[in-house]
Every structure is written in C-alpha cells, then in structure tokens.
Length: 231
Length: 170
Image (cartoon, rainbow over the protein chains, first blue to last red):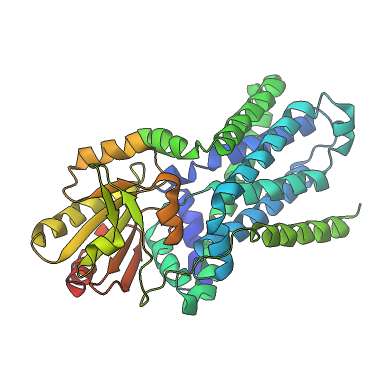
C-alpha cells in the first residue's frame, strides 16, 4: 500500500458509512472551529477565513494526526507508553477541551481575552484540541485501516505502519476541515448570521459537554448510546 | 509575534507534548505475533473469571468488541459459526467488551445469543495490555500460549482466512 492510497483512504472514509465512527469527533471539531470563528466576527473587522481559520485547521491537523498515528502504531514502544497512560491522558484532554469551551464563552466578554484573540493563539488552541481529540478517539477499523494496523502493530513493520497511519489520519482530517470550513461559510451567509452570538454559545456548550464526558470518563457512554442509537 | 516564530513555538510545543505524554507509566511488554500471550483476568458476564492459564493446552480465539461498533456486529455471526463447528475441539472462544457501557455490552451479548464466554473489560485494562485501540480486534493463541495471529477489523471480510486461522491453533 502506498502513501497516496492511505491518504485517499482516510479522506474517502469521511464521506462513507465510517462517518458513523468519526462522529466521535466531527461535531465537536465543527463546534470548536465555528465557535472561534464566530467569536472573531464579534471581535475583529477583518475576519477573513484564510487568516483566521486556515492556520487553526493546519495546527489541528498536525496535533491530531501525530497522536492518532502514534496510538495506532502499537508496535512502537512510545505508542505502548501512550496507551498505558491513556486514562490520565484523556482526563488531560478533557481539561484542554474545557479551557477551549470557556475561551469561546468568554472571549467576547473579557477585554483581555479579546486582545489576545489572534491567529497564533487560536492555532495553539487548535493544536491542543487536535492532540486531545486524537487521545479520546477510537477509530472504527475500515478495511484499509485493518491492513495498516496489521503493519503498525508489529515491531518489524511499525514505522511503515505509523507512516501510513499518519497519512490515513491526515486524509480524514483534511476532509473534516473542508466540511467544517464549508459549514462556516454557509453559516456566515445564511439568515443564521443574525443569531451568531447564540450559535457561538451553543458551540461552547457542545464543547463543555465533551469536556465533562472526558473528565468524568463517560465517553464510552457517548459511544455506546449515541453511536449505538444511530447503528 | 511573527508567523515563523509562532510556527517554531508550536512545533516545539508539539514535541514537548509528545514527550510529556510518553512520561509516567513505563511501557508494558509489547504483545507480538510469535511471542507468549499476556496473562489476563476477565470477569465473565455469567459469573466467574476467565484467565489465560485456565485455558492452557487449548487454542484461544480472543476477540475485543463493542456494541456500538458496526464491524463487531458484522463479525459475530462468523465467530459464532466457527464456535459451533469446533465446540468439541480443544479451542476456546472468548469475547471481551471494550470501550462500551456494561449494560449496552450485556445487551449486545444477549441480542446475538453469544454461546461462548464473554466478559466486560472494566477500564479497558486487558485491551491496553493487548495493545488494542479499537474494536473489533481478534487474537489467535495456540495451545502453548503463543500468539499466532492478530487481526484488526471486520473478520467477516476474511471468512476463509478466519477459518484457516482457527484450524491452525487447534
């Protein structure tokens, strides 16, 4: 299997039945991106998508893809250490998501936060969100991911498996970012634009729920009940 | 702050986070095909405990599943079929519920009428020891306790290979 095939496999899985599993993260990422962008609309006159959304998307992709691929490559010793500490890491992820949700709630209310609201800060936050989402995510094993995991789980082929998993995760993340940006553009042009503050707060609430589920160890229930209901 | 310095700072932060995430509990021995299986204690749904040593001298098919996972649901009929075929042979089939709520997993076992032992892996401890990050994952362990194969994903997509792998460990 080549790198291009892995990248395409990840990208196309987003638009297939496997979206069911990606729903563990996709609504929350869209809420995060929409939340920070709507906060920008309330703060800055120049709120171009390329300046305010593209850098956070790239940062998110970097954080998510690196940790996602490391967790899949169980043949690497480092990955074993990550898996061994996954419980604590998921709690830390919950704390990061909590901070992100509070930021979305408060950025238009606290002047000091408003001054800090710049693309580099949002990119840093997106990077941490990417890492956090990778830690809480349990991917469904698509046929292509099955082959990648077979390689990534064995010492002799772990690095090759990690590389393919990285590209597979990158493909999924590119698709997620494209969909999120398209939704934000639609939101900006629709009548919903009149209720931006409410939508921004709703995004904060969605992230707050996710933070609570991670901190309380309830993500398994989200998977069992919400995904199980859709199934 | 310029974009270049921001980018450098974030790369440094990512590396630091990666290193930090690896601190803490030491890496456990890696479960590898061709090596000894890692001992486990699985609390079975019907009562009692399933332990690796209890099945010494028998082949073991151990499958990690979740009720919410489409591939777990698709894999089960084939595994049940293999169990029925080999129920008098020296082989044990074992299902481990992971990343699931206990009640949902119990419902899943009931819904499918799983005829072999199944247990709920509280806190996903066994899954961690076996390096399982996602359901379904299936291990084939021979009568000497050696992991002969590991398969990640929907086993129903490879029915012939599955039957052959089961035969290999009897």
